[in-house]
Image 1 (cartoon, rainbow, N blue to C red):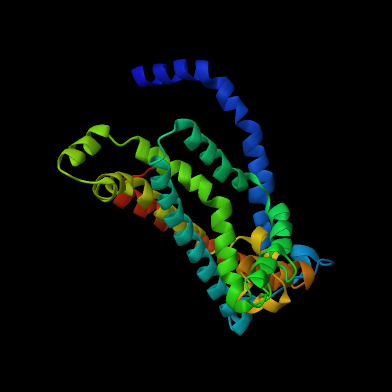
Image 2: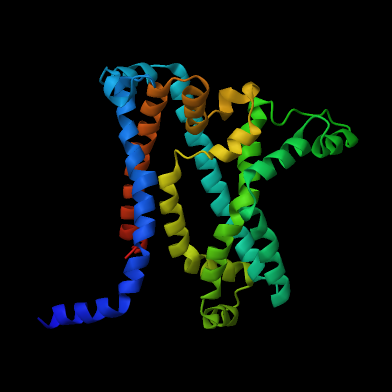
Length: 303
């Protein structure tokens, strides 16, 4: 009885907050759950003129066909390679810059650097993609610099051997500021007494970083790394779409761009939906595993 009274009293003071959830929940249902009815397309020879109920049911035939294609396996491999490279480079570079930032003595300089490196995170790839295409084209600024050094200009966005490194490097530059804030906050929480004790023992700045700073950062590093597992099949559609072309489909085509071309450009809605459902299911499994691992090994919980 006492618990029920407490809950009723709490509800009387928090009901406006609950009321505010109504609109987001309605929008969530309309834009996220109702469209899931379209999953049925992957089990049909879907024709827009016949709709969901008039199209012929074919079961798993589309899945058997799509995943028997060599292109599909290649696209999955490309997605995993690009996503894994982005995750690893993004985390490692963010840790490195966070440690260097901690060594800057002037507070206003640190704040300026943080703002500067965080800014690209908020810029759309539609804008940055155009900038990168201009910079990396045969007559762009990068190739002009390369030519001035006596080397041959390269087609950075048209060479399969260069496209993936370009994607990973540019994505790291754009997004590392986000993780940098997390890692730098972890460094700020380190007890200064630990550094003082290490200095008394004769440890230099490098040894203090290895023995004090990195161990203090390990919980947040583990959390960020584990939670990133859920995005292994997200190669970054907006970036790839704005940078790639037919010359680099061999190494640059990912699941999202493959689905876009099959579904919207070729009109093969059933095949595209089958691949999209596969990606969503695998992604959901990876997210569940990553949250379990974060709780099990790093003590992280949402609630």
